[in-house]
Length: 431
Ligand SMILES: C[S@@+](CC[C@H](N)C(=O)[O-])C[C@H]1O[C@@H](n2cnc3c(N)ncnc32)[C@H](O)[C@@H]1O
Image 1 (cartoon, protein in one colour):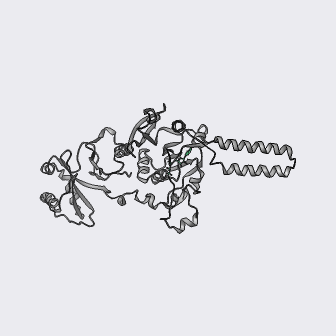
Image 2 (cartoon, helix red, strand yellow):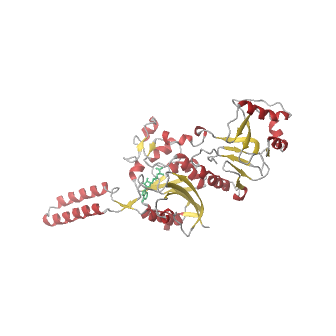
Image 3 (cartoon, rainbow, N blue to C red):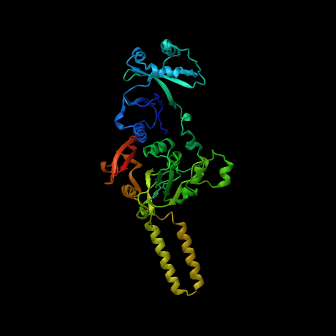
């Protein structure tokens, strides 16, 4: 499983301690603990064994530490688990030491001095700074004054080193005005605990950012959206001019939601044009089929919540046309002309399918989402969704929706402006 963690240190056997270090500047820092807990649960690590040491580091299991821990460099070296460390050193693989003091920049000279403290080890290590097979990490957490020494098993300090870098919106062939940002989409997929073979549904799929993240974990993806234009690449969605790809052009020169899946060689999702207010997915017949529902519902100015209906002015125009047609029918018995007019009206109605919208109350939309989810989700399945809050609005408007069939698991907050934030809500369908 891949997560947004910055550094992980792991020992080899069961009962090991993992140290995970997140960089503070990380945009979704508030999300990562919840993400880690979700991932840990997939692997059967209980939440109780996962505790927060400080904002910068998390330990899974208190005991034993990777190779050594202590409140000073001396005590860390004294506590070294030599049998595990020596077994690794005996392999004589090219290695390097990496030293990091959290919240402090140290000179190369200071780093070397720390590394030289390991000179007592009875081996002659093969140092290779460029292509090491083993990276030993010495890390001091200045907040709790703990020193750690371990084997680095993963690190992604730069975004380009991350597994999700290739999905960046900058280089994605098909985009829309509300395409969900890549890191957020992956955080959501992990909150949903998406695994290979899972049935996953996004009822506001748009250009498919969240669906792509879930599909990366080899699920069977379903999606729906009210707006066929965003699905089909008509007007709302657009081709990303940064991406030049003859093969994609030959498949469909007018890019659409499937283009992204073809580009990343992921299984294409099953897509429906559907209004969440009028769910066409007939759960009475299908029953609860999804393992998770993960979505970014419409909000505010960029993605207005709408549902299929007829607005007042459109309704008036439509009625006027119908009345005029009736009147003409009486006056004009020419059947050919009537047939032609009927066809014209059908064509206009077809064009207006997407524009005949009513405003959809946001609270009702969330209610509908949870209500449908309660029928479509398997017991124990997760629903993960974004919920926007605005502290300038009355408190009740900022309360995320609840449903008797769902238990709340967690929420993470991402501040957008002084007043506005979005919450990532995770709930579980009760067993
Ligand atoms: C915030 S965007 C989701 C963006 C999407 N995750 C993506 O990466 O492109 C919300 C989407 O909800 C769709 N939508 C709005 N009202 C809807 C409704 N009543 N039923 C279904 N979809 C709706 C919009 O067309 C829009 O694509």
